[in-house]
Image 1 (cartoon, rainbow, N blue to C red):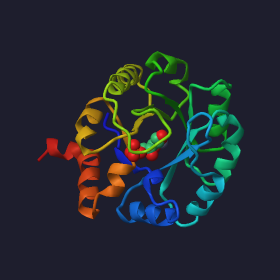
Image 2: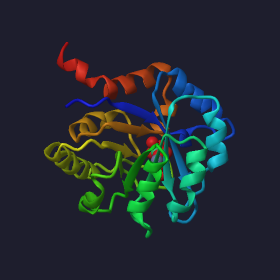
Image 3: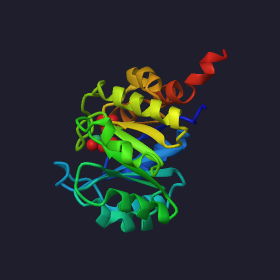
Length: 226
Ligand code: DX5
Ligand code: ZN
């Protein structure tokens, strides 16, 4: 089964005094998804922005808002981000809270849910959630900052979960996030990745470069028929 592939620009890499412009750039480039990183200074050693920013951005775009919560207590912030207009909320597996309940709360609001694991968290820890989630996000850097180096080893976990997805006929999407640039596209496609998040690499390219980057991932399958 061929799933649609999306390159999701990460707005974290934009100019935070002009996030609206970074959103419009992705929109005008024809992207379908935008990735929004929420950091609390506890789960990760950095702060980004909150529901007010997401809500204000929501007013200018109909892009799919992929909201990645890097929070110690994500279950406390699900409602504000739903109200802010998230289309998908992903929450980390590492902090202690009722993960299943939080995922169910996101789904009950009629939006998609996702579970995220850090590079050092094993793939088997995802097994209890495979039937409950719309998306699994594999961090390919330790979360907190843009512009870090892509950790290739994470792709073996994605591949392992993709194999289970095929075998069990499951429908969640597989996303990777952190340090992604065009040279990683092929390995990500081979590992079964559906959504490629890219911040620094995307926003530093010119229009043609961004189109090439997105085409490499989103339209790679066309090459099989040319
Ligand atoms: C890292 C964030 C990423 C980040 C990716 O903590 O979750 O979404 O924005 O940025 P790059 O592509 O610059 O690594
Ligand atoms: Zn992210």
